[in-house]
Image (tube, rainbow, N blue to C red; front, side, top):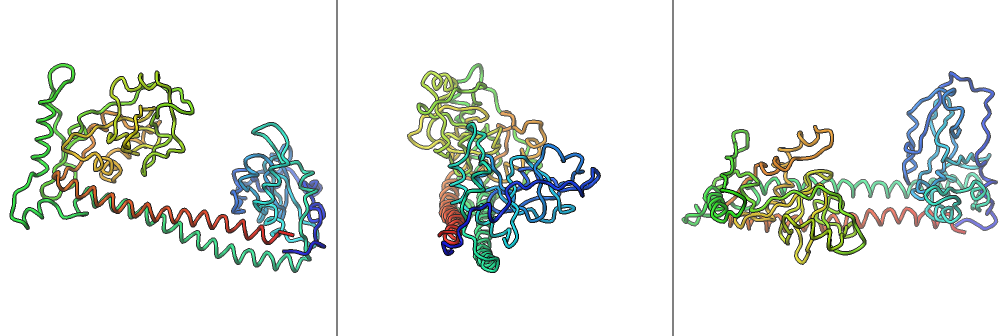
Amino acid sequence: MIAAAHIVPLSQAVEVNPKLDRSSLNDDLDVSFVPMAAVEALSGGIDVSTIRKYADVKKGYTHFRDGDILFAKVTPCMENGKMAIARMLVNSVGFGSTEFHVLRPRSGVDARYIYYFVSSQTFRKEASGHMTGAVGLRRVPSAFLEDQRIPLPDIEQQREIVAELEKQFSRLDEAVANLKRVKANLKRYKASVLKDAVEGRLVPTEAELAHREGRSFEAGRQLLQRILEARRKEWKGKGQYKELAPLHTENLGDLPSGWVWAAVEMLCEQIVDCPHSTARFQDDGFPCIDTTWMTAEGLVKERARYVDQATFQDRISRLAPRAGDIVFAREGTIGTAIMIPDQMTPCLGQRVMLLRSSAGFSSGLLMHTLHSEVVKSQYRAQALGSTVAHINVGDVKRFAIPVPPLKEQHRILAEVDRRLSLIRGVEVEVDSNLTRAKSLRQTVLMKCFSY
């Protein structure tokens, strides 16, 4: 906390939007160019690598020089914390977006001290309350900056305060970096869990247990045959039942004893694409599942979209989704699969399709397999190689899926769910600590500049 005797208007500490001395500038001079996108939010990072000729930027852009503080004046950039100190400018001169205010420290004022003051959440909140202009294009007036009061001790104390702030922020940055490494490791661990699950290394296989216990078991091939026979027997589609094309497995990897490869369409009793029309959404009603609220961890309720009853009835005319069905994103967030939760009665939005697993193949295991590398490797090149990234329904039907014996499926699913639950618990804790670190940074700034 700084003594009240040192409280002065910001205009006594900086010159706001100083005039440009053009006497030493010629049209061929290289200068740095800084658009709004070149300034990072909250971090103070700034990219000054873009170079322009002075002739190209001398009109219609904001000018600044080494040591000036750039302050985004427009919403939402200001609220997001797009502020930075201009450093290492080509020929010590820069030009950039007209949506920057420029603060030039006066003699005896440390630029870093000013940056930390104006980038604090407290200052940005106050600035937000004084913005003027139309909604969506509101700006902080320069008069607000000039009149805002700042605690301003002598230059030595400013440097001491900056040094202490940067020491504490360095510790926070190290903690945040460690937390982000944990998140990356959790992501890799999750992928390894799914890889082991679909390759038969997560739990003892049914073949191993049967051999150890001296008993027989229904292998995946026998299970698949039973599923296909039931499909043939229960056929209620149009026309005569048509046998599914065999799956070519020559280029697929080896499977554990007792497993077999099968196409998605062999394992599902129903596969339907979404209606090819855009639903009209409203604030409540019937949930309409699309890629907007689908993630690999499930549906994000805060992003839920709803339709009225007439739209709902129209969109379930081909098949009414039910709990346990899999919704698969074939455009947008390609490859994301979610299981419809209990007590939800949804319809399908755009860019998704529905898979209803047969009784002989676990719906949960199908969802996890769709998220695994064994399936992603089958569509990645095709999806990314198209103009608009997407997967055709026909290609999804032919995805090769490893099929374990039924009892083994249940054990695999239970172990996958157990491990993913542990991972989610750690992720929640990591995210909480990341939020806490961000809050702590602002708390440090608030205490430093309070008076």
